[in-house]
Length: 435
Image 1 (cartoon, one colour):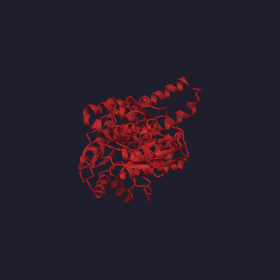
Image 2 (tube, one colour):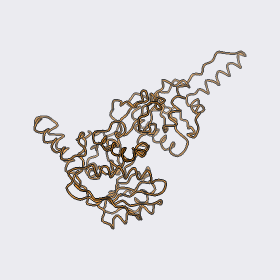
Image 3 (cartoon, rainbow, N blue to C red):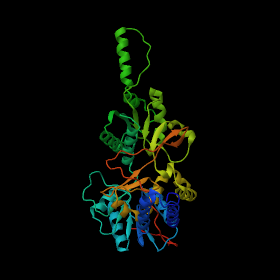
Image 4 (tube, one colour):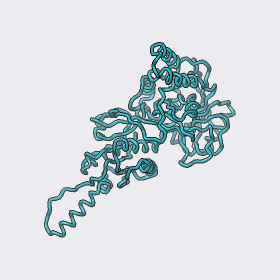
């Protein structure tokens, strides 16, 4: 299933071959029925799928990347047994436009709806209580949202999920006492809050946190405060005044911290990591989310990131054969987009491939779908969670780390990669409409 995720016929042949070769293997009794169940579910594409995206305005580039990934996955499938029509609706700039596009898609006969993309549009659509047609929103409702419709699924590239996984990885690596360094602004606050909440749940301690201005290049101030170097210098000055003579002095950073959780984008991360080293924290481990990595190899520039541990999607760190083929195609067609928005292309790929898997994921909360964006599971509120692999920068190159089990209250077994859905042999050209 992992080797041929885009070819359901090959998956079926592989299952039959396994049963012939290993009739007495325990997996034949346990895993094969599970795979067959997923394989049966994978045939469940509707005749018409509506894709709701803001094709104009500030989110147009992001929407195009999602759309291109979605269509790449759509056209990549073989063994299609029935026609599937993709209709693309421009949701405009306002949440009300997304609701209007949703209603139009329903009138046009959509059997499944993917989108909208913006968080505000998802909230507006949820407030309308979608009818019987299931919706896979490409963002998440706010924390604590109530009255979520049963057929509304939420899927996206949540920075909060990645921050929580950073806390989990640090805990599993034996860390106990954290320092937190995040940018000023709403994004930094969201990431810091998600990390610290999960860190406290695990039993960890946050010793200190600092904000830095991402528009600057010199971060000495927040770094010194984070590492208590200002206190060290203050003690030196007090002692020099007391003794009335010059003293040999070397600042000492705090020794009670086990690691730093860093929230940063590539430019800032390439500046922050060397400055942490300069301020006597070269041996202090640094954990981060995917945002520190631009997603494309650049060893000469990324050597400044050496030592940082970070999580990222398989599409970036360890793509399988089918994912590599799709990435190569997208890089060939839209090289600039693939360099800067590749993760959104992967979101589109998984949005398409998830459609027939959602009923099985909802039925079994321990099931996993091995997607381009992560190992995907579904909770009781319809939120899709991404389990991510981990890597560490060495000589400017991300090197995969051993993957460890995430501490959850109900750690279910990971199913083998779910067979990919069967779609049409000759898909029609998708149509685009505006509200």
